[in-house]
Length: 253
Image (cartoon, rainbow, N blue to C red; front, top):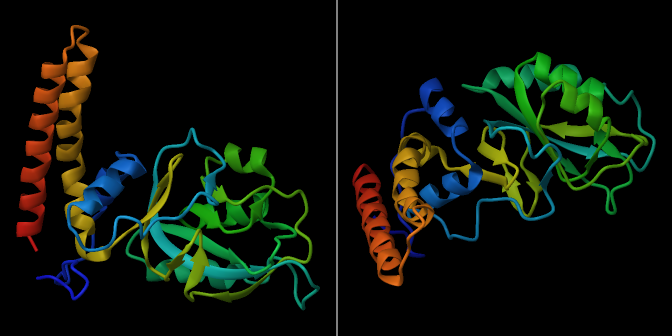
């Protein structure tokens, strides 16, 4: 069924399983974005964060989890200490059916201090978080890398200023898109995308097939003896495989 804007509307699907989360972690974020496009449920220029959000540790494998959101400010003194909200934040992790990704919106413009450091990231990881995203800056990057905790930021600043968390578990705006509590996120060295819950299971299970289709072209090119006709044939086979996969995933809705 198509929406008034030309995109398909989908029925509600059961939550994604731990097996499907593991499948998503096998694949890079561009592949996940490519597979999401097969469903025709949102414009191809929406649902992912823009170039302001960069992986601090691009060598780390893909991060997949559910958003625990918060707003942040560091430009003015506030009551309480920088870690006053940590207990409430980690308690919110229990609301998710799987691992958590902490997502901060820095309300300071321009940003003046780091959103996170070693203590915050170590706390989050100890309570089951698998990563952090902020529209602001980070610090203690050597220490955060050492605990194998992927973080995505808009920069790096050495001080935490008057940092404090204003609110948790509300919609936030990060990297040009709105993130709601519980949104499913996938991120790696290429960036961060949301995965609509309605198609998350199918996306997880379709990534292998999409990679197999693209491998037809890549394997041909790596063979050495190439020709324009050979490339055209490989592209045609790849296109046919993707078209078949698109028909298959859309027929499941």
